[in-house]
Length: 63
Image 1 (cartoon, rainbow, N blue to C red):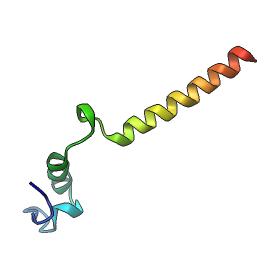
Image 2 (image 1 turned 90 degrees about the vertical axis):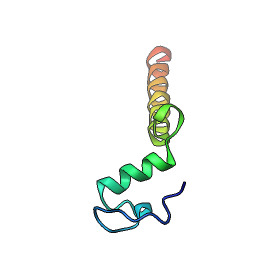
Image 3 (image 1 turned 30 degrees about the vertical axis):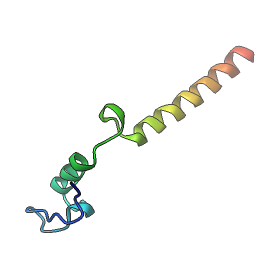
Image 4 (image 1 turned 45 degrees about the vertical axis):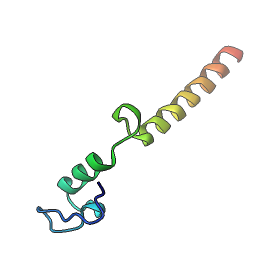
C-alpha cells in the first residue's frame, strides 16, 4: 500500500506531504523504517559519532 493517494482526515492534505503529526505517523507506518525500526539517519549519526570518538581516542593514546 502507498500513501500517494491517501488524504488525511485531520488536515485534509495528502498523507505523502506529512503536513500534520497524524500524516507523518501514517506515512511512517506505511513506509516503515530501517532495520529494527531505527531510522537510517540515526544509524549514520551514530557511525559518525563513533568515528570521531575513535579518532580522538587514537590521538590520546598515540599522543
